[in-house]
Length: 224
Ligand code: CMP
Image (cartoon, rainbow, N blue to C red; front, side, top):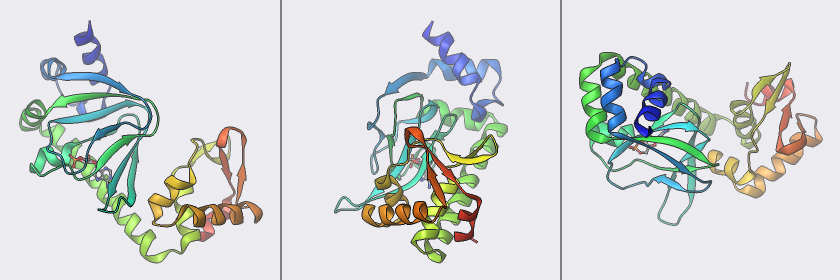
């Protein structure tokens, strides 16, 4: 039963869409489905790697920290995203930690199975490369943001990145704690609170129920 369910989940993952039935079958045999509650570490920076992971539902942050415990959030992953591929490809230690931001369902695929799938499927290699290129593009944009924008621009950039179009309005649907925004832009939580207050007072953002935020069009002026 679990095996059949694993196969069904794997078939829905965009990364694996190029695999044939036999390849999905053997990958399912080497995978396990897990659920972690909010705040649990799935992958730890600096540790050796054993598995590749695919998020089925929920969000998780990719985070690095220095020797004093100061943290920076590199990315937030969501349903359908994969992670843990970097250390499987270059055999170096895990480049970052991945920590759940809410309850997450995910699959883990054993290292050797993932590697043998890559060797068997050019399409899957391309899918992994596309994922890596997307991350590089996002990292380039982040470098630009940090180098060229002031703190108002950096906060505006994060809010726009996390927003979506809902019925003609741009809305940040998921609650974004100020502490998490601070870790994404290299600012203090107090500074982010001040900037958010300023944006609200000047009508760039409008708080909505359940921690959602509506963004006014003029907020884009901070990043242009
Ligand atoms: P790995 O190094 O094995 O373990 C940590 C994982 O975090 C890494 O593989 C990637 O899957 C993921 N990761 C690292 N850096 C980034 C980034 N800048 N954006 C998104 N994901 C990342």
